[in-house]
Length: 385
Image (cartoon, rainbow, N blue to C red):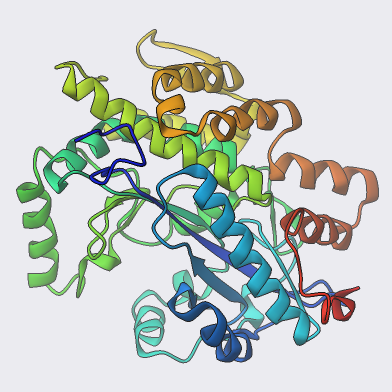
Protein backbone atom coordinates (compact mmCIF):
# COMPACT_ATOMS: atom_id res chain seq x y z
CA UNK A 1 0.00 0.00 0.00
CA UNK A 2 1.38 3.38 -1.04
CA UNK A 3 0.06 5.47 1.83
CA UNK A 4 1.33 8.73 0.39
CA UNK A 5 0.18 8.44 -3.25
CA UNK A 6 -3.41 9.67 -3.60
CA UNK A 7 -3.66 8.02 -7.03
CA UNK A 8 -2.74 4.58 -5.73
CA UNK A 9 -5.85 2.30 -5.83
CA UNK A 10 -5.41 1.45 -2.15
CA UNK A 11 -4.74 4.99 -0.91
CA UNK A 12 -6.44 5.08 2.50
CA UNK A 13 -6.20 8.76 3.50
CA UNK A 14 -9.11 10.08 1.48
CA UNK A 15 -10.58 13.48 2.23
CA UNK A 16 -14.08 14.77 2.86
CA UNK A 17 -15.32 18.18 4.03
CA UNK A 18 -18.61 19.32 5.56
CA UNK A 19 -19.57 23.01 5.69
CA UNK A 20 -22.53 24.68 7.43
CA UNK A 21 -23.64 27.88 5.65
CA UNK A 22 -25.70 30.78 6.92
CA UNK A 23 -28.83 31.66 4.94
CA UNK A 24 -28.83 35.46 4.66
CA UNK A 25 -31.50 37.99 3.74
CA UNK A 26 -29.52 40.47 1.58
CA UNK A 27 -31.79 43.37 2.55
CA UNK A 28 -31.70 43.06 6.35
CA UNK A 29 -28.47 41.01 6.44
CA UNK A 30 -30.12 38.84 9.07
CA UNK A 31 -30.38 35.06 9.11
CA UNK A 32 -33.49 33.63 7.45
CA UNK A 33 -35.17 30.40 8.52
CA UNK A 34 -35.53 29.12 4.97
CA UNK A 35 -33.84 25.71 4.75
CA UNK A 36 -37.05 23.82 3.93
CA UNK A 37 -37.56 25.68 0.66
CA UNK A 38 -33.90 25.37 -0.33
CA UNK A 39 -33.87 21.66 0.48
CA UNK A 40 -36.75 20.91 -1.87
CA UNK A 41 -34.74 22.04 -4.89
CA UNK A 42 -31.34 21.19 -3.42
CA UNK A 43 -32.13 17.49 -3.20
CA UNK A 44 -32.84 17.48 -6.94
CA UNK A 45 -29.47 19.05 -7.76
CA UNK A 46 -27.11 17.93 -4.96
CA UNK A 47 -28.92 14.75 -3.78
CA UNK A 48 -27.59 13.59 -0.40
CA UNK A 49 -24.82 16.20 -0.38
CA UNK A 50 -27.17 18.77 1.14
CA UNK A 51 -29.06 18.39 4.41
CA UNK A 52 -30.57 20.49 7.17
CA UNK A 53 -29.09 21.29 10.55
CA UNK A 54 -31.00 21.95 13.76
CA UNK A 55 -31.64 25.62 12.93
CA UNK A 56 -33.64 26.36 9.77
CA UNK A 57 -31.25 29.22 8.93
CA UNK A 58 -28.41 26.70 8.44
CA UNK A 59 -27.75 24.53 5.40
CA UNK A 60 -25.10 21.81 5.55
CA UNK A 61 -23.24 20.34 2.61
CA UNK A 62 -20.73 17.54 2.32
CA UNK A 63 -18.28 16.76 -0.45
CA UNK A 64 -17.95 13.44 -2.18
CA UNK A 65 -14.94 11.38 -1.10
CA UNK A 66 -11.85 13.11 -2.49
CA UNK A 67 -8.26 12.01 -2.84
CA UNK A 68 -6.51 15.34 -3.26
CA UNK A 69 -6.85 18.95 -2.17
CA UNK A 70 -7.61 19.91 -5.77
CA UNK A 71 -10.54 17.50 -5.87
CA UNK A 72 -11.77 18.92 -2.56
CA UNK A 73 -11.52 22.46 -3.92
CA UNK A 74 -13.63 21.58 -6.97
CA UNK A 75 -16.24 20.01 -4.69
CA UNK A 76 -16.41 23.00 -2.33
CA UNK A 77 -16.77 25.44 -5.24
CA UNK A 78 -19.49 23.28 -6.81
CA UNK A 79 -21.41 22.98 -3.54
CA UNK A 80 -21.17 26.66 -2.64
CA UNK A 81 -22.25 27.52 -6.17
CA UNK A 82 -25.23 25.18 -6.01
CA UNK A 83 -26.47 26.43 -2.64
CA UNK A 84 -25.86 30.10 -3.50
CA UNK A 85 -27.78 29.71 -6.76
CA UNK A 86 -30.69 28.02 -5.00
CA UNK A 87 -30.74 30.75 -2.36
CA UNK A 88 -30.63 33.43 -5.04
CA UNK A 89 -33.82 32.05 -6.59
CA UNK A 90 -35.50 32.87 -3.27
CA UNK A 91 -33.96 36.35 -3.11
CA UNK A 92 -31.45 35.17 -0.51
CA UNK A 93 -27.72 34.55 -0.30
CA UNK A 94 -25.25 32.62 1.88
CA UNK A 95 -22.34 33.46 4.13
CA UNK A 96 -19.63 31.33 5.72
CA UNK A 97 -18.53 32.18 9.27
CA UNK A 98 -18.63 30.55 12.70
CA UNK A 99 -21.33 32.92 13.99
CA UNK A 100 -23.61 35.55 12.51
CA UNK A 101 -22.52 39.02 13.66
CA UNK A 102 -25.88 40.08 15.09
CA UNK A 103 -28.77 37.65 14.54
CA UNK A 104 -30.24 36.22 17.74
CA UNK A 105 -30.70 32.55 18.56
CA UNK A 106 -33.95 33.49 20.29
CA UNK A 107 -35.68 34.18 16.96
CA UNK A 108 -34.54 31.03 15.14
CA UNK A 109 -36.84 28.20 14.10
CA UNK A 110 -35.91 24.57 14.77
CA UNK A 111 -35.95 22.24 11.76
CA UNK A 112 -38.95 19.91 12.13
CA UNK A 113 -37.24 16.58 12.75
CA UNK A 114 -37.59 14.14 15.62
CA UNK A 115 -33.85 14.06 16.28
CA UNK A 116 -33.58 17.83 16.65
CA UNK A 117 -36.68 18.05 18.82
CA UNK A 118 -35.12 15.37 21.01
CA UNK A 119 -31.88 17.33 21.34
CA UNK A 120 -33.76 20.50 22.31
CA UNK A 121 -35.89 18.59 24.81
CA UNK A 122 -32.75 17.15 26.43
CA UNK A 123 -30.42 20.16 26.22
CA UNK A 124 -32.96 22.99 26.52
CA UNK A 125 -31.38 26.47 26.08
CA UNK A 126 -27.94 24.96 25.51
CA UNK A 127 -29.41 23.56 22.28
CA UNK A 128 -31.51 26.59 21.39
CA UNK A 129 -28.40 28.78 21.56
CA UNK A 130 -26.53 26.56 19.10
CA UNK A 131 -26.60 29.14 16.32
CA UNK A 132 -23.07 28.28 15.22
CA UNK A 133 -21.47 27.12 12.00
CA UNK A 134 -18.52 24.76 11.66
CA UNK A 135 -16.35 22.89 9.21
CA UNK A 136 -15.65 19.19 9.65
CA UNK A 137 -12.79 17.42 7.89
CA UNK A 138 -12.89 13.64 7.42
CA UNK A 139 -9.80 11.61 6.62
CA UNK A 140 -9.98 7.92 5.71
CA UNK A 141 -7.88 5.41 7.64
CA UNK A 142 -6.11 2.13 6.82
CA UNK A 143 -8.06 0.71 9.78
CA UNK A 144 -9.60 2.13 12.94
CA UNK A 145 -6.86 0.82 15.26
CA UNK A 146 -4.35 2.92 13.35
CA UNK A 147 -6.92 5.70 13.24
CA UNK A 148 -7.21 5.75 17.02
CA UNK A 149 -3.45 6.02 17.41
CA UNK A 150 -3.33 8.83 14.85
CA UNK A 151 -6.14 10.60 16.71
CA UNK A 152 -4.21 10.37 19.98
CA UNK A 153 -1.24 12.17 18.45
CA UNK A 154 -3.22 14.60 16.27
CA UNK A 155 -5.06 16.02 19.30
CA UNK A 156 -1.97 18.18 19.93
CA UNK A 157 -2.51 20.05 16.65
CA UNK A 158 -6.21 20.82 17.13
CA UNK A 159 -5.68 24.29 18.68
CA UNK A 160 -3.37 25.14 15.78
CA UNK A 161 -6.14 24.27 13.30
CA UNK A 162 -8.66 26.33 15.26
CA UNK A 163 -6.34 29.35 15.14
CA UNK A 164 -6.22 29.18 11.36
CA UNK A 165 -10.01 28.93 11.02
CA UNK A 166 -11.29 31.51 13.53
CA UNK A 167 -14.32 33.32 12.11
CA UNK A 168 -16.65 34.06 15.03
CA UNK A 169 -15.67 37.26 16.88
CA UNK A 170 -19.26 38.55 17.20
CA UNK A 171 -22.32 37.19 19.00
CA UNK A 172 -25.79 38.74 18.98
CA UNK A 173 -24.48 42.17 18.02
CA UNK A 174 -21.60 42.26 20.46
CA UNK A 175 -17.85 42.12 19.97
CA UNK A 176 -17.03 39.20 22.25
CA UNK A 177 -13.27 39.59 22.68
CA UNK A 178 -12.86 36.06 21.31
CA UNK A 179 -11.65 35.08 17.86
CA UNK A 180 -13.74 31.89 18.08
CA UNK A 181 -16.82 32.53 20.17
CA UNK A 182 -18.42 29.56 18.41
CA UNK A 183 -16.11 27.30 20.42
CA UNK A 184 -17.35 28.80 23.66
CA UNK A 185 -21.01 28.35 22.69
CA UNK A 186 -20.44 24.72 21.73
CA UNK A 187 -18.65 23.97 24.99
CA UNK A 188 -22.06 24.15 26.72
CA UNK A 189 -22.87 20.78 25.14
CA UNK A 190 -21.76 17.53 26.78
CA UNK A 191 -19.12 15.32 25.18
CA UNK A 192 -17.42 18.20 23.37
CA UNK A 193 -13.87 19.54 23.36
CA UNK A 194 -10.54 17.74 23.30
CA UNK A 195 -11.00 14.00 23.90
CA UNK A 196 -8.95 11.87 26.23
CA UNK A 197 -6.42 9.41 24.86
CA UNK A 198 -7.65 5.89 24.11
CA UNK A 199 -5.22 2.98 23.94
CA UNK A 200 -7.37 1.03 21.46
CA UNK A 201 -10.61 0.99 19.51
CA UNK A 202 -11.85 -1.55 22.05
CA UNK A 203 -11.39 0.90 24.91
CA UNK A 204 -13.19 3.60 22.95
CA UNK A 205 -16.04 1.26 22.04
CA UNK A 206 -16.43 0.23 25.69
CA UNK A 207 -16.87 3.92 26.52
CA UNK A 208 -19.52 4.34 23.82
CA UNK A 209 -21.32 1.14 24.87
CA UNK A 210 -21.46 2.28 28.49
CA UNK A 211 -23.04 5.61 27.48
CA UNK A 212 -25.62 3.82 25.36
CA UNK A 213 -26.34 1.29 28.12
CA UNK A 214 -26.90 4.07 30.65
CA UNK A 215 -29.11 5.99 28.17
CA UNK A 216 -26.70 8.92 28.09
CA UNK A 217 -26.71 8.71 24.28
CA UNK A 218 -28.54 6.61 21.73
CA UNK A 219 -25.63 6.34 19.28
CA UNK A 220 -22.06 7.46 18.69
CA UNK A 221 -23.19 10.49 16.71
CA UNK A 222 -23.86 12.26 20.02
CA UNK A 223 -20.17 12.28 20.85
CA UNK A 224 -19.24 15.72 19.57
CA UNK A 225 -15.53 15.92 20.38
CA UNK A 226 -13.12 18.15 18.45
CA UNK A 227 -11.79 14.96 16.87
CA UNK A 228 -13.52 11.60 16.82
CA UNK A 229 -13.80 8.29 14.99
CA UNK A 230 -16.89 8.78 12.86
CA UNK A 231 -19.50 6.17 13.83
CA UNK A 232 -20.63 5.53 10.24
CA UNK A 233 -17.91 6.53 7.76
CA UNK A 234 -14.92 4.89 9.46
CA UNK A 235 -12.97 8.14 9.16
CA UNK A 236 -11.23 10.26 11.76
CA UNK A 237 -13.21 13.49 11.79
CA UNK A 238 -11.73 16.84 12.85
CA UNK A 239 -14.53 19.06 14.16
CA UNK A 240 -12.74 21.88 15.98
CA UNK A 241 -12.71 24.44 13.17
CA UNK A 242 -14.94 27.45 12.70
CA UNK A 243 -16.48 27.57 9.24
CA UNK A 244 -13.92 29.19 6.96
CA UNK A 245 -15.13 32.16 4.95
CA UNK A 246 -12.95 31.77 1.84
CA UNK A 247 -12.73 28.63 -0.27
CA UNK A 248 -8.93 28.89 -0.14
CA UNK A 249 -9.01 28.80 3.67
CA UNK A 250 -11.24 25.72 3.73
CA UNK A 251 -9.02 23.85 1.29
CA UNK A 252 -5.80 24.87 3.05
CA UNK A 253 -6.99 23.60 6.42
CA UNK A 254 -8.43 20.38 4.99
CA UNK A 255 -5.17 19.72 3.13
CA UNK A 256 -3.22 20.44 6.30
CA UNK A 257 -5.34 17.96 8.28
CA UNK A 258 -4.75 15.28 5.66
CA UNK A 259 -1.01 16.02 5.64
CA UNK A 260 -0.79 15.89 9.46
CA UNK A 261 -2.45 12.47 9.52
CA UNK A 262 -0.24 11.11 6.75
CA UNK A 263 2.88 12.50 8.46
CA UNK A 264 1.93 10.83 11.74
CA UNK A 265 1.37 7.55 9.90
CA UNK A 266 4.74 7.93 8.22
CA UNK A 267 6.35 8.32 11.63
CA UNK A 268 4.57 5.17 12.82
CA UNK A 269 5.83 3.32 9.75
CA UNK A 270 9.40 4.28 10.69
CA UNK A 271 8.88 3.07 14.27
CA UNK A 272 8.89 6.62 15.59
CA UNK A 273 6.11 8.90 16.72
CA UNK A 274 5.20 12.38 17.90
CA UNK A 275 4.70 12.57 21.63
CA UNK A 276 1.14 12.50 22.95
CA UNK A 277 0.04 15.05 25.53
CA UNK A 278 -2.58 15.12 28.23
CA UNK A 279 -5.98 16.62 27.49
CA UNK A 280 -5.48 19.21 30.25
CA UNK A 281 -2.38 20.57 28.52
CA UNK A 282 -3.93 20.68 25.05
CA UNK A 283 -6.89 22.55 26.54
CA UNK A 284 -4.54 25.33 27.62
CA UNK A 285 -3.69 25.90 23.97
CA UNK A 286 -7.32 25.58 22.89
CA UNK A 287 -8.30 28.39 25.27
CA UNK A 288 -5.58 30.61 23.82
CA UNK A 289 -6.70 29.75 20.29
CA UNK A 290 -10.33 30.62 21.09
CA UNK A 291 -9.42 33.87 22.76
CA UNK A 292 -6.55 35.27 20.70
CA UNK A 293 -6.40 33.31 17.45
CA UNK A 294 -3.22 33.94 15.47
CA UNK A 295 -2.49 37.11 17.43
CA UNK A 296 -1.53 35.41 20.68
CA UNK A 297 0.84 32.81 22.00
CA UNK A 298 0.54 29.08 22.46
CA UNK A 299 2.58 26.66 24.51
CA UNK A 300 5.27 24.55 22.89
CA UNK A 301 5.07 21.63 25.29
CA UNK A 302 8.34 20.16 24.05
CA UNK A 303 10.21 23.36 24.85
CA UNK A 304 7.90 24.06 27.82
CA UNK A 305 7.55 27.70 26.88
CA UNK A 306 5.08 30.06 25.25
CA UNK A 307 5.78 30.96 21.64
CA UNK A 308 4.14 33.31 19.15
CA UNK A 309 1.30 31.39 17.56
CA UNK A 310 2.33 32.45 14.06
CA UNK A 311 5.79 30.92 14.65
CA UNK A 312 4.21 27.62 15.66
CA UNK A 313 2.12 27.68 12.49
CA UNK A 314 5.25 28.02 10.37
CA UNK A 315 6.74 25.07 12.25
CA UNK A 316 3.60 23.03 11.60
CA UNK A 317 3.84 23.62 7.85
CA UNK A 318 7.51 22.57 8.03
CA UNK A 319 6.51 19.46 10.00
CA UNK A 320 4.43 18.14 7.07
CA UNK A 321 6.79 19.35 4.33
CA UNK A 322 8.03 15.86 3.44
CA UNK A 323 4.55 14.53 2.59
CA UNK A 324 2.79 17.40 0.82
CA UNK A 325 4.43 16.88 -2.57
CA UNK A 326 3.43 13.23 -2.67
CA UNK A 327 -0.11 14.23 -1.66
CA UNK A 328 -0.16 16.94 -4.33
CA UNK A 329 -1.16 19.51 -1.73
CA UNK A 330 1.86 21.80 -1.43
CA UNK A 331 0.06 24.78 -2.95
CA UNK A 332 -2.96 24.28 -0.71
CA UNK A 333 -0.95 23.80 2.49
CA UNK A 334 1.34 26.72 1.77
CA UNK A 335 -1.73 28.97 1.62
CA UNK A 336 -1.36 28.86 5.41
CA UNK A 337 1.43 31.43 4.98
CA UNK A 338 -1.06 33.78 3.35
CA UNK A 339 -3.48 33.31 6.25
CA UNK A 340 -0.63 34.23 8.58
CA UNK A 341 0.03 37.39 6.57
CA UNK A 342 -3.55 38.53 6.03
CA UNK A 343 -5.24 37.15 9.13
CA UNK A 344 -8.26 34.92 9.47
CA UNK A 345 -11.88 35.76 8.79
CA UNK A 346 -12.21 36.87 12.43
CA UNK A 347 -9.37 39.35 11.98
CA UNK A 348 -10.90 40.73 8.78
CA UNK A 349 -14.36 41.03 10.34
CA UNK A 350 -12.96 42.99 13.26
CA UNK A 351 -11.03 45.27 10.90
CA UNK A 352 -14.17 46.06 8.87
CA UNK A 353 -16.15 46.77 12.03
CA UNK A 354 -13.39 49.05 13.31
CA UNK A 355 -13.47 50.96 10.02
CA UNK A 356 -17.25 51.22 9.67
CA UNK A 357 -18.83 50.60 13.06
CA UNK A 358 -21.49 48.70 11.10
CA UNK A 359 -22.18 45.00 11.57
CA UNK A 360 -24.17 44.94 8.32
CA UNK A 361 -20.94 45.90 6.54
CA UNK A 362 -19.35 42.88 8.21
CA UNK A 363 -22.10 40.63 6.81
CA UNK A 364 -21.63 42.16 3.35
CA UNK A 365 -17.94 41.33 3.50
CA UNK A 366 -18.66 37.77 4.61
CA UNK A 367 -21.01 37.25 1.66
CA UNK A 368 -18.45 38.64 -0.81
CA UNK A 369 -15.63 36.49 0.53
CA UNK A 370 -17.81 33.38 0.74
CA UNK A 371 -18.55 33.62 -2.98
CA UNK A 372 -15.09 34.67 -4.21
CA UNK A 373 -14.34 32.49 -7.23
CA UNK A 374 -17.73 30.77 -6.86
CA UNK A 375 -20.05 31.06 -9.88
CA UNK A 376 -23.65 31.88 -9.02
CA UNK A 377 -26.30 31.07 -11.65
CA UNK A 378 -26.52 34.23 -13.75
CA UNK A 379 -30.22 33.69 -14.26
CA UNK A 380 -30.86 34.39 -10.60
CA UNK A 381 -27.84 36.42 -9.58
CA UNK A 382 -29.75 39.70 -9.86
CA UNK A 383 -31.95 38.62 -6.95
CA UNK A 384 -29.02 39.22 -4.58
CA UNK A 385 -27.57 42.28 -6.27
